[in-house]
Image (cartoon, rainbow, N blue to C red; front, side, top):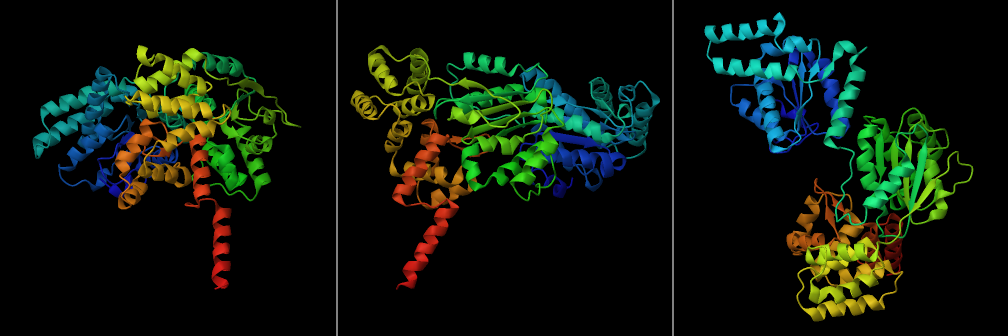
Length: 544
């Protein structure tokens, strides 16, 4: 096994969870087909275990290989002419088949995706002499030399070959070359692993009708181009709705789908940066695209997206020109769907634009749904206890049906048994203007202890989209009790930690944190502010 190869797509330990395990006969396919497949999977953001058969020493490695298979979700055996002549390949295959059978019983999503490189399924199913002869040679090897495997092992391998050969896969001989085949394999893996899908957390109360309305507008089976704009105030659930729709439609578009988060905030760093992100994702380029300026970016994006059916979501757009500069002005490919979320409906009316948006207004939750969402957070139930019903309805009425405010307030009150504290919350909320969303969520911030507030501000200013590992070390050294503090912040819906330990935060909480940090003058994260502060400091020192 060659850890140097694994390092291209995973960390160098077998304890990491792999997503795909490649099983192949090195001399047959490594230098060409397998190498390209491996690279394309990695560039698609997939963690791949690739074994170096030639560097194995002794039998001990076998245990590590089996462990790597256990940690993978998808298995891709590449059947070539000499695959069955390797007892290592057969061991791997037997373990894949065993895990695949267990996963069906356990309700998991493991799967074998076979590739028939220069053989046919009939060869693998031992219906032709090719693999039968290879197995016969292994039997002879066992008799003539050391007994590295038993006759029982051979029977297990034969059964594994028959089962794997019966699974529908890809036959290279049916393709003009392996480029198209590899593209299809990567697309299938992306869909099965839900690589493109977005994390959706929280209680999806009142979403069913909204999802149905957006799907009706998208008319996904039509070959026409559809552009849908979801508009409404911050904290009302636009991004959550867009993520749900995106996740449900991703399988229909394979690799040709992208969700661009937080366009409003990212644009502050320049539209070219966003264009590069978009182009990198949709082109599956192995290197970051070189974009000279915004017009160059538009041209390159148009060249790419006009030739394929795309699903593109632009989240939190605040200017019409952002849309034009991210999807261009040329005709889009038939069947393409563009979904935009915004707080400002007027940006959906773009002058001299080839297409028109159909708009969808996100309205507040109904009183019943608002009470249900609040109750789930505050009481872990769909309705409040009888003795808290009136008080809960009063608190809910101050949130104006905004899911973000309802979740934040409910989570902050969860487990709170002193009725006086509930009444204090209600009084504070009543004093906050109805349109002041930041004011409502700031009450949740004020209820945090100083350590929790510091960590909240750090994430809001510096660590959205960052891995939590390094910040945790910093906070620990600063004696901020990061594990306890994060647990509280997550429970109160003020911070989210995704499956890959990446920090995520709703834009309203982010905006709140940055407003507070600017007032306190405790943190600098904006490039212009940093330059201004440094220049101010230089002036002060020059006057001394």
